[in-house]
Image (tube, rainbow, N blue to C red):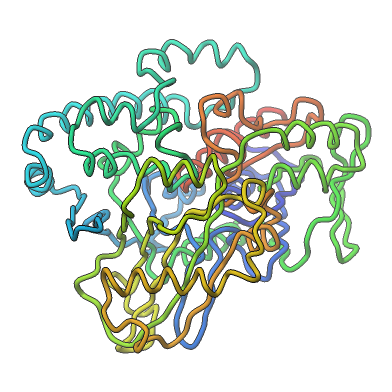
Length: 495
């Protein structure tokens, strides 16, 4: 579909915003992306320190076809701008007793890994994969790119959701297929990568396993932000405009229509359509705070449940570490109780589970010769659950994380450090306007999914749209790119 002489603003240059902008520009709508920070990416920002390249995250790329489609819209190939590297194993999981488990697409090796932990669970895992394939068809292929604008659309989806017991948690469903507690953790932790508690996130999110098995796990050469740069290059070739370092201060309205966008620098421009890839509470409360709709929607949003935040330690070290794969999960001594501390009790516990990212095993160019780049990520309560003084405790918490990695995985780490810095819930709030410092926006529970999530088109302001983690279908690269497809379809149909 093509539309001439129409204009659109996209606020925020994260994956969702850029994917939406590419779709609109490909259809002939003159699109301007307005980004507050000095470079595009949003949560996929990047830093260069002392010769090391550090991705802010995300780092797990699945379903590359959803990205390739953005280039195909204009008859181009993603290979022109981005090179994706396969990652294997997908993850190595490690427990405090020293047990390792490699999760990959090598079926025989995976069965052997499962049998090593608990032989009867080999058959249970096969049945679980059948279940995951079913929820993938219903939850991703059929519903992942469709906007839920009224309750009737939710009713139509209900039979499929009921068939796969969507009211159950991922952990509960996994536990019905496998007996070994380590395997239950191995098959349920994925929801943490999109901000969900395995103990309460809908079982529909088991589709992530099929998503990985079908499309693999990938990493962009040059880092995740290289994929962002590739998307920007495509968008600008199509004639789109990116405006950096200028936060949006206001979405102006006239009646029930968005009329213009004004930035902190004083720049102002009228648009036919406005879409926000920004935080949903920030958009309604701050950018639309001058309208009754903005104030009312913000109050409703603030009552919802938000995903936890993250504490991320970035570090560059001397030496190479061929024994550490690209992605590792270091489980702590507790699983369910630790998740309860993070999601419910608002406790920064004495123990933690970590995601360790080692990109130089795939792309050595991300560090000086003979060195390696890492980051370690710990889920922590958001600022509404635990309004802690992160400024005072951040150094100590970062030290504790590095101590754990040194003890379990990297002896002599402290002596090899070249550079380090960290990112706290306060940084999520400051840099990304993330409500409560949440790293993933709304928590992906069943009662905050599909129609219950922020609608892709506002119910009152008819030419205001949303894209990204806060709207349907949710967080993660395939999720936010899927939201762009749903939102673009609405915007083009409305025009």
